[in-house]
Image (tube, rainbow, N blue to C red; front, top):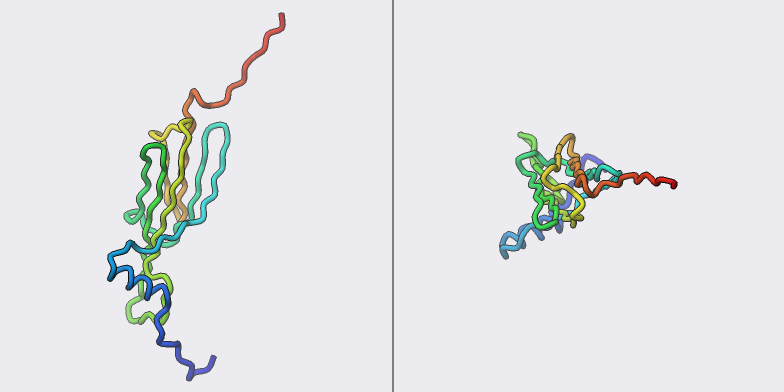
Length: 137
């Protein structure tokens, strides 16, 4: 690349799609965030990558055994600079999971830190594995 190189003025597909969606009233394109789920005898811990998502743009809901995560990232444009190329202007994340009735959804703990959402979902006490003592006799 030299000093005379200029970025193409053609609009990226994402912007064209986003503008087409705005004009037709369609919802924005959703991105499924990468998720890691760990399980142990106490419950599950879910980690979802949500880069650029502030707490006020994050919505975590549980309804009828379904857990949904919906979020919108905020990508600020620094003052004094002009966007030359943008493929995803306002990423909209969405992911849903079906939860077993073994989990206590009233005790879900949610934390957002450094673009990672951590959900801790404990098992109901009666659903936890327990050791049964066998008597000889």
